[in-house]
Length: 245
Length: 152
Image 1 (cartoon, chains in turn red, orange):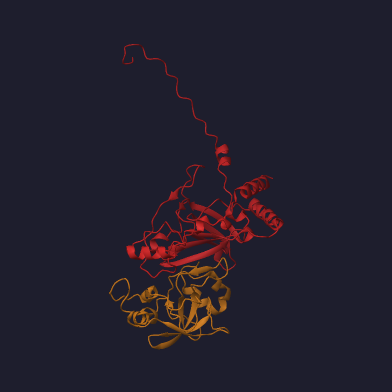
Image 2 (image 1 turned 90 degrees about the horizontal axis):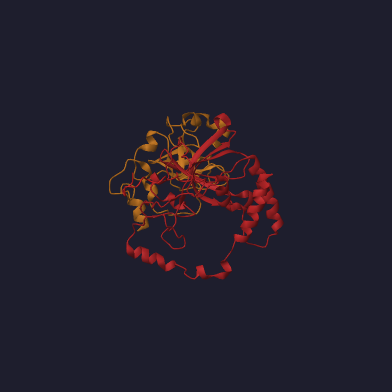
């Protein structure tokens, strides 16, 4: 009986919200950065043939979607390893190259020794790539982890894959990394690197001095603009059709 | 000031003024030569096995004085001559800072294993990871590979 004395009206149960995961997956498109051709005067036919080969390889071997900052485990075929396969776990610090020569660098600290391995995505020696932890970082290039405290680059070799929550968005880890004392391999405080993921504990004077090398006109330079939206749409359609066949 | 730092530096580690018994504290100084990150004459190296010669602290870091190679540049698997604690000792390179071919590991320090003239390792254990490429020359380095614990 409700508060005004009248018998409570029948409230039907709320309608179930049906989330069509297929549609969500299609709406969220991820095109691997090595598909996008670099700006230049090369014949687009060359990139077309390369893409055909890349799609061919992806049909046989699944290359998961990953960004810089993900923790991956790569198993490679090695004639000199026992059991002929070697497994390396590490955080992806850089993704480079275009086309079939696309590479990514994994970094880990094993027994207090920092090790980095550059793998080629389309190398037939790679037998498996597993994504153990999904998280994007604030930067595209985590090379500064070489000068950061080793705890930020250590990842357990027998780490279990963290379960994927949604097919929605990749979480961004806004971690600010603490660095070893200077000198560093590169002057990461300079605006040319545009790093947001370091907790700079340098004095104000040094930070101001680093700003002397800023080039504020670069973002307004129209000749440097490379708008890839239309190219990406075309290539996405081509790649998704190629993979469906 | 760079020169005084390197000379006085071995006891004066940058992390504090404590004298460190771990010999690789010198590696955190400013790199005086940055050009070739593979191992050549006068590169300071890090000895990674548990031999007494490699691990006792000394006021000068172990340096390479000769590379047994046609070119003077040492890569993984090359033998070099080190000057440690005032004596000459041969060593085997097991990792360097220079990026090599893709799919091979690149280490954050130039690692070296002390070796006798006949190829027998001086230490008894190697904790740091060793690249699998060394297994290719199983004949020459079988004893070094036998004492290695981790492979990368």
